Image (cartoon, rainbow, N blue to C red; front, side, top):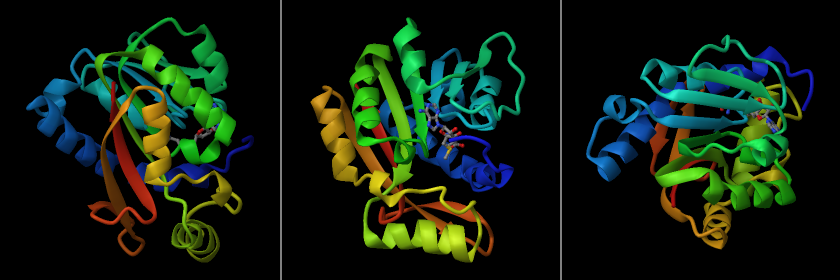
Length: 218
Ligand SMILES: C[S@@+](CC[C@H](N)C(=O)[O-])C[C@H]1O[C@@H](n2cnc3c(N)ncnc32)[C@H](O)[C@@H]1O
């Protein structure tokens, strides 16, 4: 992935609020606290962090944040407690000695080969603190998801540059379940995401046919 068109990150920014809403729901159920208290003094790792803007929201809530992306398209400067690193996730994980309370893997898995996905999941248990949590979102693997993410989003609505997605890399929720189980991680929740192109709004949905969130625990 090189020379990323800035247009690529626009729909991702529109996803910020639904991610926050999803995490707030899980946090309130699992930890009986609100998202603002939860993110105070947490160690967060954002893999495939893009511009770093999403991660920065949680720095503002008091977390220690590390973002990693293979492309340096960062739009936030590094400072104490907030660092964005240009690296392939694999090289980063080989050198990393830290453990994290929260790992973000948003819209990232669908850009990795099957071998890379397996490698990533095999590293997750070692970098997750006790009672840690992984929030991710990705694209489901089916004909409808392929049609919506490529024919509609890339070609008709031109929300994303052409060839952003390769449907062969998409994952079903059951693929996440298998990757998690193989690495002694527990898939806690799956929830669909819907998109209204007229208002450019993403919402939580009961249907996980196209985009969906997942929460994983150790
Ligand atoms: C669809 S974007 C998601 C960005 C961000 N997570 C978000 O949702 O706003 C996928 C990101 O993964 C990065 N990426 C792809 N392959 C990578 C790899 N092997 N190591 C690290 N980053 C990678 C890309 O550069 C891109 O910024």
